Amino acid sequence: MKACSLSGDENQATEKDVSEIKSFLSQDFIFNEPLSQALKSTADELMPLLTFLVESSVKDAFSIL
Image (cartoon, rainbow, N blue to C red; front, side, top):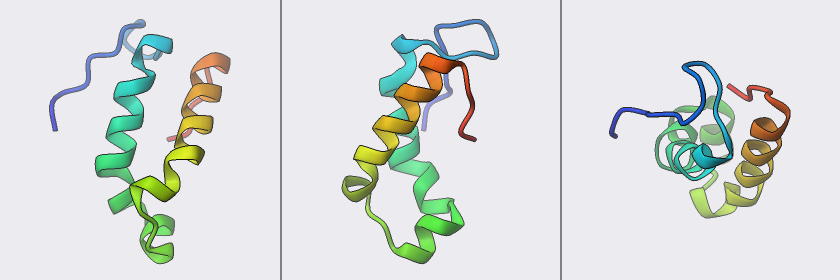
């Protein structure tokens, strides 16, 4: 996975970063996150939730990680 390059300041993502964040979460994070492992969730199953969480978090400047 390539290094992250957020569009916002060094600590805050913007709407431009939503796609990259969702990509990271669906390709890497969910496979290492204990709850997702226990549920044996797939990226496709979690994409609606990831989309909601990432878009809401960026809009409200709130971290889900």
